[in-house]
Image (cartoon, rainbow, N blue to C red; front, side, top):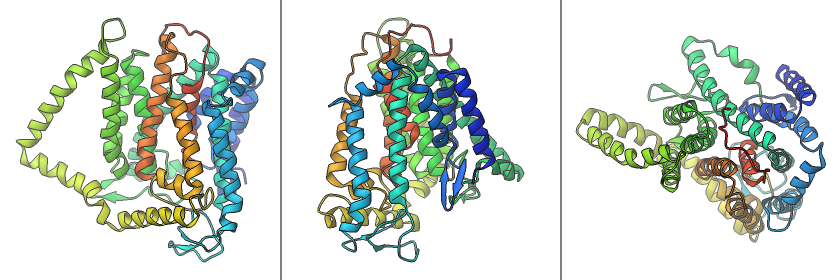
Length: 458
């Protein structure tokens, strides 16, 4: 059944078709924010607004021969699209055949509904409803990737995609504050239009007296995980002087929200992402108009960290408060009920790999609590190899170094991908990394015409 937000999505899609590709891809990137919304509800399945809107993006993206050629080129042997397509084909085959061929050969934590009563525990291996849905999601990821590669093959399309990603980051911050405000005033019902998906929502969870921030997502972990991508993208743009100071402000607020969200995923992943960004700053040091921010960050951060560390060390009350917060969310997590449950999911996932002879129990079959384990258990060693080759080809140089604008955007998109991956390694439950990851990947893979040196904000 189509929902009011689904009708709004279709109207936006029609408007996008009327106004062209640039507005369409801008809206698409922004709609990826609505992770708790369902545009269409069919039984227990929910189709999110961004997945519905993807149909309109495809129509716009492949209108011209040039865009089609750009998408086809990334499907050539050795390029990222080729390896992603191979993963999709292999995953689709395993989704149907593996749960049947290896039926009852292993115990799984089912990702979707199985033939056995739902108890929240392990059940014998067999087909589950998520074999179909996860195949569809991975197919949507592939289509999204190709559409963004095609779109970003032109200067206008690349800039529209970048603006859409910046809008995503800005609206993500806005919805986080709206979430905090509606919770404080008891008006969460105002967000019911976007919290209508068939998910379990954790909008009232409180940890140590602090209400968890979920923004436009079902839970704090999902909010923090996606905000990591926004942090990586916006912070890198700011370091490379692509846009005004407001982009740096969005990055800083995103970081604060990740830490304040009370998400273990965010708290563990944030230092890793900051290390990536600091390495980016070091790599960007030198002389020139676009080196000032990298130079400043490289010089100031070590002193700032030292000052903060000394201040915390000489203030026992502050130290104890910070330690208790970290202990609650990180250090004691493995011994908590949820921590032990997630560890058990991963243990079953590793066993699934062995029991399936290394081939995997099928895309969408098993739930885990770490992306690498999800890939290994669901699509086995062949699928893991294919995804690894996709990442290697994605991060490999693609001939854009001579174009400063395109090189900076590519680096920003790669850092967005990397930060999302860090979060997924810590708490990713499925093989699907989400549309936002593949928008970043599409931007990083694209080979646009020589872009101008004007800023993103212009």
